[in-house]
Image (tube, rainbow, N blue to C red):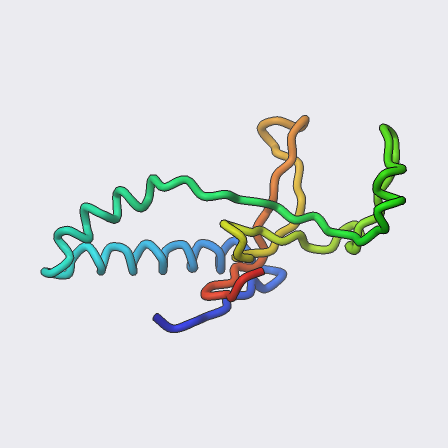
Amino acid sequence: MAKTKIEAEPDQPDEQLNRAIEELRGVLQEEEKRPDAKAAGANSNIIMNIPVDVQIILGSTEMPVSDLMALQKGSTVALNRRIGEPVDVVVNGRKIARGEITVLESDPSRFGIRLTEIIAGAKGA
């Protein structure tokens, strides 16, 4: 499988994301159609239900243990990213995408991530 990187252009992020999702669906459907993939077709349903650990990385920082021990309720920890910079989407320890924080339209008390870049075949984060 070839390694590819799909970066969303600022004016068409939804279109490129949809294209990447459709490409993945096409690959899965082709795998199911292969004659020697009868068992693999059954296995793909099992694979699609495996839970994965998804993390959204807002940023990080380094601090001495003494500063860490001094943290208390109300303390602020400065991160290495600025407001408006993309956040990383990490699945099982591997960076797979970047995105921007957004407020959910259906529930303004919650936020989510709008994907702006998908990294296919990326090495570990």
